[in-house]
Image 1 (cartoon, rainbow, N blue to C red):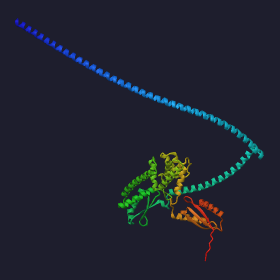
Image 2 (cartoon, rainbow, N blue to C red; image 1 turned 30 degrees about the vertical axis):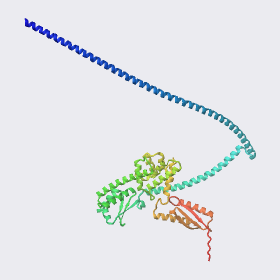
Image 3 (tube, rainbow, N blue to C red; image 1 turned 90 degrees about the vertical axis):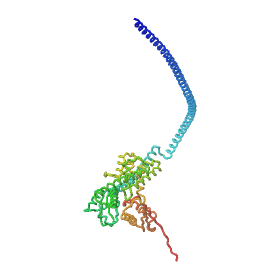
Image 4 (cartoon, rainbow, N blue to C red; image 1 turned 120 degrees about the vertical axis):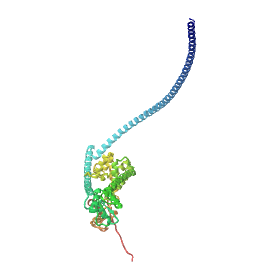
Length: 506
């Protein structure tokens, strides 16, 4: 029994001790928790105060900024108010001046009306005096004046009609000659002109056999690849390249040059070299067009038009290089447009493109001016540029001031001395025809064709022709040359009549 009691007592004692330990532990934890809670509370209060102070500072800053802006706005409003007051004062002053001017104008108008009434009275009195002196009324005098003006107008109209008919005949003849010449230029014939043939020089005649090849296979391959007729004849150290297209002739000439230098001449090599040269020539054409537009200060030109400008380098007109002629015309157009107060850049652009139709790759069976106009329209040129290109040979009506400038500068560039070459036989024949035509008149002693046929001097006998007859002779000879001969530019006819007294001292 005693051990049981002892065990129970020990259990109770252990439980009591545990209860005391738990109690003491829980009290410590509660105190620690209360301290931590107090610390957190203090921290939160401090954070809340800091946030409050920050918000207060920000609010004060915003209020000060708002006050500053308000002050600036008030200052601007005050300045504007001052400006408006000044303007209002200025307007009031101007209004007062306008009222004063209006009063002055009213007074002047009244004075003018008064004077006009006086003038009308004086006119009426003068008219009555004239009617009394002439014995005719105003209506009768007006009818007589109208009849006289009608007769004079009819006479002048007949004179103008005759002049217009003469000009039309001359223009029709000139246009017909131009069409024939351009047709001859476009068609290749057996008797080719000088500008349809190129001469390729070789070191010796042994190269001719290598160019011809076995059974002519090399020359046939070369003609097929280039589209140029190659004439190998007895001419020493020379081969003739014949074609209307100057670009093809240039490709054939350069290809022959490379083949002869390389020494390997056979159909496969010929095709390879011709293809390579075609690419080089095409690149050179484009580079020439770009360089030309840059030199002239022309921008925004379509790439196809730039290529056409480059092709002008290999085209000639009456022996005159087309690219050089177009550059010269462009510069002349710019100078003339500047003198007239027009846009020189647009005039220079139209001058460069005016003969672009001559290098068209397609034959459209129409004048080159119309072909050029259609090309310019196709590639986005302005309407005034297109009109100037199409009207420079009167193929269409001129619509802008640039068109007559291009026409005049084209004629200036083509007619200047040395611009266009002729075949020697044609040149000599034209000079002889000029002198013979002048010698056919009675009283002519000597004739001289000067300045490449652009001036004709005629010496007449003083005892056979009077001074008045020299003027008639000069006029008649110039008209006859204009009607019967074809020539570039103009021909100046000078008739010289002089009296010489010669004695000898012995």
